[in-house]
Image (cartoon, rainbow, N blue to C red):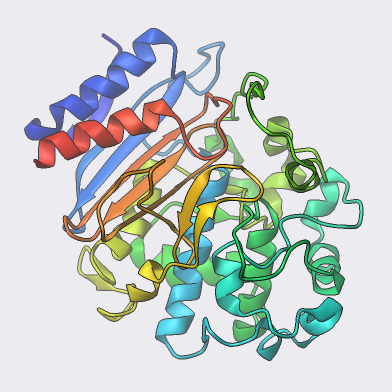
Length: 374
């Protein structure tokens, strides 16, 4: 059986065995798993290698690009500002970002950005991959744009744009970029090793993601909206290998972390604002998460999806608890949070599968965790 390092309470041995089996089978090359219960790590394990050549082992402090799991960090930033009464989710976005009122968007509320219902799932103007590092260009283009569907009527997964939209609201309120504000107000107090905009000094710890096989679109409806969202610019996993991507702040997709840092931060949500003795939010500060913003077939990804304030909520495609929420990243990373059990479960890996928001590897880790808790 593959070597798995780290710590794991005996009752969660099924989680450790699931990771070892995934490494043994080749489903994983290098990966980490963390479970935080009542704000404390009961599982903090890792194994495998940083690349397919097995040139070096995945270490305790190895980082990798977690793609859309990054979005959950932007949600924490927005919840913090709302809890401090600096942000109102039900206020027009233009209250904070006046230029956003162009193109008939004066009535779009902040909650529409959080719930993927703003009608801005991609850019109208052509965007080259490296232009994703140009914050002003990406945000001003969205501010000028006309929505692609009636805002608030349905969700359409804002794969890359959501981070710029929420991030610009955060910047207008705080005066800091979302990466800098997140580092100071979220990661630092929790001692969490997660970055939105990676300093060059940390490059040596990064395991480059291993690109997924081509997505199987058989039986999938490839709509114009899907193409417009994911093909401008075309999403190529190898972009994450480049310095321009790592240095940029792409708050929906370029977070660098591991399972421990993801779970450490999101355990604040599990603990209704508090984790490991650190209170970031008031006890009611996480309540907006469970205000349903969209419930139906997502216009972009074509799957039944239920969005709260940012996070995905329990649905037929992700049956979790009534006070549980989640999101996952392109290729397989996953975070699931359950307030009723005060638990946060995270899986982060380098070998990507073709799913947009998680796959069976993370689901197996989650199932083994819930079996242990039961």
